[in-house]
Image 1 (tube, rainbow, N blue to C red):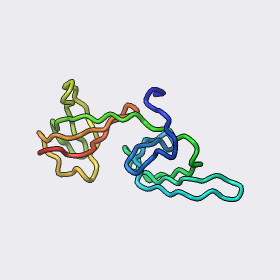
Image 2: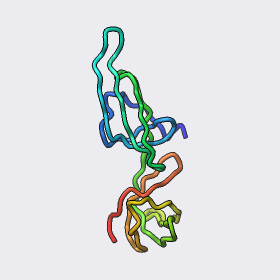
Image 3: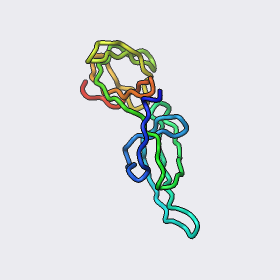
Image 4: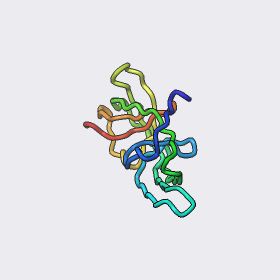
Length: 132
């Protein structure tokens, strides 16, 4: 797990990047910068959405610090079958099959469709539908 996390300076984090908050990989949706005070340093407030659970998380940190960033891998996969709230996918690189939960955004998913899958921390989630 240690090789799946790296550190980046807080001032390089932008909206749309991925960071770790409370051990959960999240996508940054909002950044707020505050000015330094009389006795303190500038702060950055990051609001992010969890990749796997969809929960909203907030991180408040000094702007000169570092933040944990998960190593993200994006892959293409083909939908083999859809059963209730679970989809069976086949990785198009190594033909490995695996299952993933379906979020509300992907309820119209059909067998044969090609999707993009995001993988980090030993978990996978649907990112978007490419075709089908």
